[in-house]
Amino acid sequence: MSHQVTIQPSGHQFTVHDGETVLEAALRENLALPYGCRNGACGACKGKVLSGSVDHGSHQAGTLPDEDKAKGLTLFCTAKPTSDLVIEAKEIGAAKDIPVKTLPCRVDRMEKLADDVMALWLKLPSSERLQFLPGQYIDFLLKDGKHRSFSLANAPEEDELLELHIRHVPGGLFTDQVFGSMKAKDILRIKGPLGSFFLRESDKPIIFLAGGTGFAPIKSLLTHLFHHGTDREMVLYWGAKSLPDLYMPGLPGKWQQEHGNFTFIPVLSEPRPQDNWPGRTGFVHQAVLADFADLSGYEVYACGAPPMIDAARRDFMAKGLPEDAFYSDAFAFQ
Image (cartoon, rainbow, N blue to C red; front, top):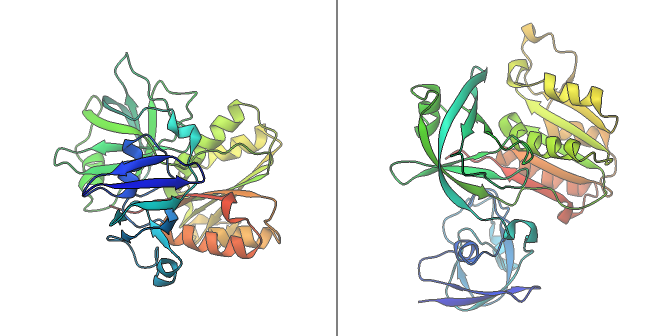
């Protein structure tokens, strides 16, 4: 049975067919609601049901606790309507006009950036370009119908090749292939661009927070900002376990030398004795808390594992960061 959904405050309406989630139906109708993982893990799509009822679906309990449900909140990526709905959600106008494409691509080249991080550069057919917003991601479409999501590390202005940073998850269906049998000239299928993690129009200073390969979409955002000559004050905190996990340290270091409005602060959580690490240690978001007493005038773009994102959101808001000034992309392993 189909149900009608009305989005407030825009007034846009769409129909959710039987078996569809609210997010699936909205995207089908080219209405860009915020989302990240699409599997109930990250919370980026959380919104309020103003009237009507939903089946909340399968999700991580910490992402949608019972107290949130009692307030009328749900995750639109897992929620299925059981009646007509009126929902409160902020639509993303900038992504709405970008078509999502399914395309073949060829592996142009591969480079191991660390023992467990591979950079892939993908070449699209000569007649195609993937229009995207910096920070967005693509899905690899696998033969068994599954998909794997990875953020684009290149800026839209440098779109001859698509750049990805892929961390090896031992036993992972796709990453085992990347680190084992994949080679240049292999043909793959992708779908994109996807996701609501991209730059918003503002003149506020920005704190970028990256964990591990969460640096990839941050690289896309920063390269885009440098390309356009922004004068916004920006600082990047990049957290990793040990020194080799900062797999491209020279690049943000170079940015810092070239741009007076940019600062790079690497943070290691478990530096090894052989690292001889003279820099910051601990959890990366706590380095931000140590440096900023009041975050009320800032915007934060954070990308990394869900526990890092959750802790940063909670603790930064306790330091005054407005809820609508925290933009995140949580890397949930599939």
